[in-house]
Amino acid sequence: MRVRIDSEKCQGHGRCYDLAPELFGDDEEGFGQVLGDGKVTPDTENQARLAVANCPERAIELIEES
Amino acid sequence: MAVDERFARDFEDSAEEQVLGTRNEIITGPVSDWSTDFSHLEPEWAADPYPIQDDLRQRCPIAHTDRFGGGWLPVRYEDVAAVAYDTDRFSSRSIIMGNFRPPRDIAPIGGSPPISSDPPFHHDARKLLLPAFTKTAVTRQEPATRAYCHALIDAFDGQDVVDAAADYAQHIPMRVIADMMGFPPEDGPQFRRFVENTLEGVNLQPEERIERMQALFEYILDQVHDHLDNPRDDLTTYLINAELYGSKLTADHVTGAMVLLLIAGIDTSWSAIGSSLWHLAKTPADRERLMADRGLLPTAMEEFLRAYAPVTMARLVKDDMHWHGVDMKADDWILLSFPAANRDPAQFDRAAEVVIDREVNRHAAFGLGIHRCLGSHLARMELRVALEVWLDRIPEFSLADPGAVTWSAGQIRGPRTLPLRIG
Ligand code: HEM
Ligand code: SF4
Image (tube, rainbow over all chains, first blue to last red; front, side, top):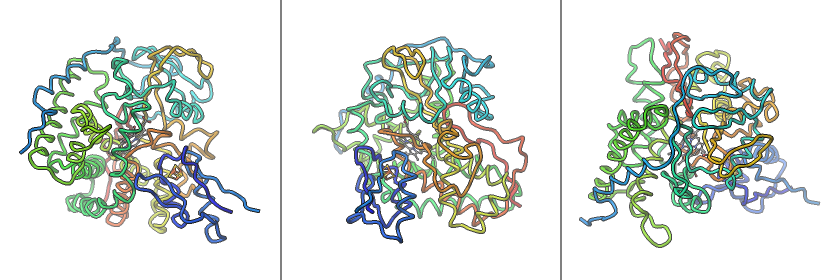
């Protein structure tokens, strides 16, 4: 699984980089950014789901990879 | 010393343009029916708006009023979100619902960019400010904020009962924003008056409001001149030098943005800190749980922001239209209640309860869409530090007199008198 941010929807609330600092960071204007390739490991899966569920703009997606 | 023509003293006169626009009859007094005659300025709403909103959500769900020249109050999350996202149909030309509508041609810039701005100008005005308010940037204010919170508690020395709203919560955001703007820290009490006038003086007579606004603009202009003489590393100097579309900002833009930053950050954070302490003072089980598990604080804080969201905004309808079942007229107000959205059972389980370990909390306390609170990272830092220091220093506290707690009326809601027993 990978996380993805829809930059059209993201408004920089920062819930993702608060709740899942291993997966997300902020850019110089505070918008959310996926760190690295965004791969979710068993260790970060819970964080990823929290970020998805708490983003006020519904801007984060969890993409299943085959 | 360079002379900056933009801020010549006669620029002040332009504040009189404020007189243009439309005014309506001021109607006050008890509300007959909240679905047809609502008013966010009546004492009943200030004391406890949630039962009113819950009732409207079931039977209405978009309430109307003839007060303030006509307006609407959506109370479902879905409707509030739809208004916030629809900047084509709803304008931010004025975001304080009252008896005065600024002229239409003030859009898309408005009096205090970016909060008063519509697309496309909004994006550019906001972009100027974003870097100063990122989570990383505001972390620089944290040590001074923490030290200041300690100093406020040191000053309680020996008292058994303190007013946590007036003697603690209020001062924290004032000091932080004064530091960031580069205003003298001792000017805090003046800010209090400015905020009151802007946000709570909505039903005053127009002459009085204008006079009071003028005092605020004079203060801001004094600060601009002080910074022109002594430029320094703060937001005021930054705004004076900032450029947009290849030239310096207009004087109106600079002073409007300064007024916004001063006003938007004070009542709001003050309210959030106060409401959180009020909740903990009256709910010993939550207070004890938080003391035992301090790691829960970030989650609890989001729940306080959801359940006691301090900020309600407003919009103006652009054109006559049928919208979500009602007939809106051009220039009708929308009272955009993020607090009501945050208590919609269709969006939140146990919406009416405060659940301090609520993990899924997609609340809208800082707004939704392009106007997302620019200061949200700063506000969260202030709230977290204020609560951490309070809990470290005063683990045991309770409401000294529940009946003595008072709440602000209008669009920013929080405790203004909060006597807590701490000894
Ligand atoms: C808990 C405290 C706070 C809450 C709940 C809050 C809430 C909000 C909300 C709901 C909006 C959206 C306005 C709209 O949709 O029209 C907003 C905008 C704004 N807030 Fe805050 N705010 C808080 C603290 C602050 C602080 C500390 C600052 C710092 C100066 C600040 C500055 C602003 C600004 C400049 C805007 C306008 C952004 C734009 O239009 O792009 N706020 N705030
Ligand atoms: S929580 Fe959502 S809106 Fe906020 S920064 Fe992350 S992706 Fe963007």
